[in-house]
Image (cartoon, rainbow, N blue to C red):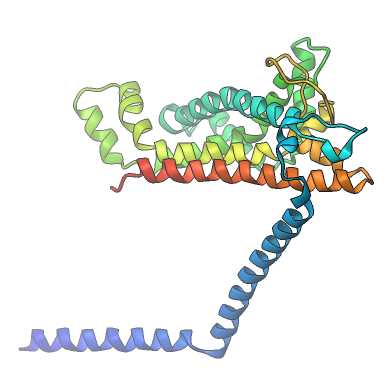
Amino acid sequence: MSTVSNVAVKTARETVQLTAKRSKEQTPTALIFLGLLWFSLFFGVAVLVALIVDTAITGWPRFDMNLLTNYDSTLFPEKTGFRAGILGTAWLMVTTAVLAVPLGIGAAVYLEEYADRDRWYNRLIEVNLQNLAAVPSIVYGLLAVGVMAALGFERKGIVLGGAIALSLLILPVIIITTREAIRAVPEEIRSGSLALGATVWQTTWRQILPSAVPGIATGTILGLSRAIGEAAPLLMLGIPLAVRFDPTGIFSEMTALPMQIFFMTSQSQIEFQQAAAAAIIVLLVMVLALNGLAIYIRNKFQRSW
């Protein structure tokens, strides 16, 4: 009987504490703070929607096939297009992914599964990774110029130069997100695989990486989404603002969609302003498509432990 009484008293005490906690959440201060949070969210979303709608309205007269199939034209601004920029951006993203994704995943696997964290150089790498994620993008453009010069390239405004700059830009993001995805895999999977006689490499290749695919893919695609809209590193490389031919390889001269948008917005003619606004919407659609792909991959391969 005494045990039942003790349990009842404890339950009543917890109920009183929970009720008191909830009553504190209804205080004027808490309600004001919650209102400010909702206002901040609404204000940020409202400004974003207003900017997108205004840009779409400005570029509405130029939503036609000429925008996608024509090259830029100073003689006929009403027919100017972004064919070279769209194809150049596609070449940039594919080459950047080829350079950055294997290197980023490999570095993350080494740091998470093989590296001795007591070693001073591994700790130095850890610190630098956190710092590199916050470095301004224009610095990576300067670094890419140095890399291209060291490789002996006289022309730096080519697909390979832009891909090197963007790869350096997103490499810290890929490494950090991949490490987080690997870290989220339960330790029991590693222990079970090793206990059955698998090597560390077999465990990593057949168990850890397949389990971490959703996080790795999401981080990689989000990194590419950031790179697709960057113009500052490409400016440092001397990427042309406008070209009238399609890129044919990684050593071909090219331009990118952000570069052409930058060029068009600096022109005074209203036709160029409308074309730039339409191109911004095209670039936004490309970014949203990449983000949608990341969400699809995450949901398709998501596992619950």
